[in-house]
Each structure stands twice: as C-alpha cells, then as structure tokens.
Image (tube, rainbow, N blue to C red; front, side, top):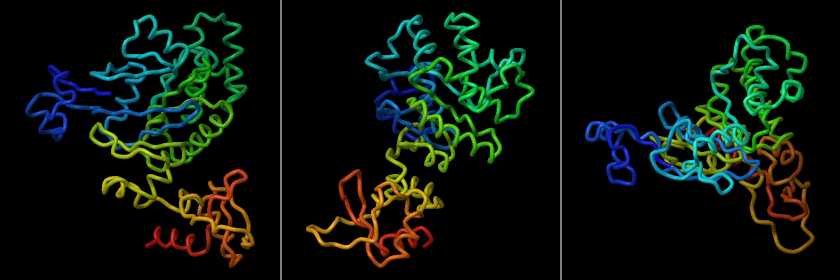
Length: 332
C-alpha cells in the first residue's frame, strides 16, 4: 500500500523519488509519502501490532484498511475482496458488519446512555431496539461494565469510557478489529488494565486485531507479531522474540535497548539442539514458550539441563549457561 499527499501523488508511487528523505521529497515535488510500499498479511485470530513514533505513518496505514483514508495505490484484500475497489454501498456493509474500529478518543455520544452508545452500530444495521439493547448489555458484561448500561458517559472514568468504546466495537460481532492508539491518553495503571482486557478478550472471542501503538512495551505485550515502522515503511516485522533477539538495524536496536529481555525471550529462543539417543537426564520439562524469567529458578535448583518440549516432541535443551547468558546480555 501507498499513501502520498500532494500534487500528482500517483507519480511518486514506485519511483526513485519515493526513497528520498521526506524533507527533500517535499521540497522537490511538494509531496509527502505517509505510507511507502507496505505489505503484510494478518491471519484470522492474530493480533498484529504496528509500532512506530509519531509521524511514522502507522495511523494512516490502519485507517486505509477500512478506507477512512483512501490509498494512493495498492490492494487491501479481505476474504478475497479488494476493499480499494468496493462500491460505496459495499464499503458501508463491510464497515457495518466485518470491521470495527477503536480510536484513541472515545467518541461517545454524551446525550445517549451507555447501552445506546454500545448499540449504535447495531442501530445503524437496522436491528430492533429490544434486540440491540440485549446484545449491548451482553457485551457490557464481557468488558466488565455489567450494570452500567443506563448511565451516561460523563458518569464514567476515562478507563471505563474506553471500555465502552471497546464494547461498541465488539457489539456488531466483527471479524476484524482495528485499534488506533486506543490507550495512549489513559493513565499508566488504567492503560495496563486495558491491555490486560484486550488480552483477555482475545482469549475469549478470538478476533483478528490490528493494533497501532507508539509504545514498544505495549506492542511486545499484545502482539503475536510486530511491525516496526519508520518514515512510512516497515523496517522489521516478526514475533516479539524475533524483534528483541535479532533487531534488523540500529534503529530497531535502539528501540529495544531497554526492553527486559528475560520477560520476552523464551526457551525456544535460547535452547540448544537436544542430544541424540536415549538415557539423558533432565532436571524437568518446559514448554517452548516459557519465558527466561521463569526458567531462572528451575536452572538454579538443578545442575541438569531442562528438556524443551512442543506438545509431545522434544525440540531442544536449556541449561544454566544459556539462561545466565541471556540475563547477562540484558544487563551488560
């Protein structure tokens, strides 16, 4: 996908000029490239996080998925349909039934009760009042706001209002949920609670989520995969482990410098190949996703290596040296 602002924006797409620094491109052409040749796939049920600093293009990117911003070039394919080519009527149907969005600013209707705010999308769909209120009340329970339906937005805290925004997005039972820095305006403790809420909801409802943030720790906590964006392009894409253990360049390395690696790296990342044959002694079995922080007490209590398993398969071993090396690299 491409998004270029300025006169004759199409001429910038795929041209050598697109690689110019933004200031130079603006001076020479009067154009700004907000999103530059970005491609990615998101699997059903995956949480895909796009992380970047202000001005990196991440919000423009997510808003092109439902065409709040029109792409300059490219395709956005959802279940075989190219969203870019949809008619206005079909686009409205997609927005009503398949994609929901949660914004940084809650956008609640102050004169409407909470239950009516949550049911707004259902109202747009033409669902009768009794049915939409029933569904809205059910979703309020899911986000921890059962019993608040008859209240008004100004009676709720910021964190509670963001839960209402989350409930509104869930009420239409969308396949895809887009989050545009939804928690960045919240206090740190409330923000952490909302992150935990998204994790809990994802475990229960298994939606496909594309989440935009400028906070690396939020990205690492929420994402199945993370894309780090700079100047309109992806500079690295991978699992949290891959990004932390193998930064693609100095820009990413600077980002992850202060990340507590012991809370991100797993047994799978630091393991060695399992020895062949039988008769080997182990201090215990650990699943491949066990984080290094949780491995520490296990390797301290035994001189024997730990067997790393994935289901019923032995995929490697972890010993005290591997765990200590990971910790030393973090602190050294």
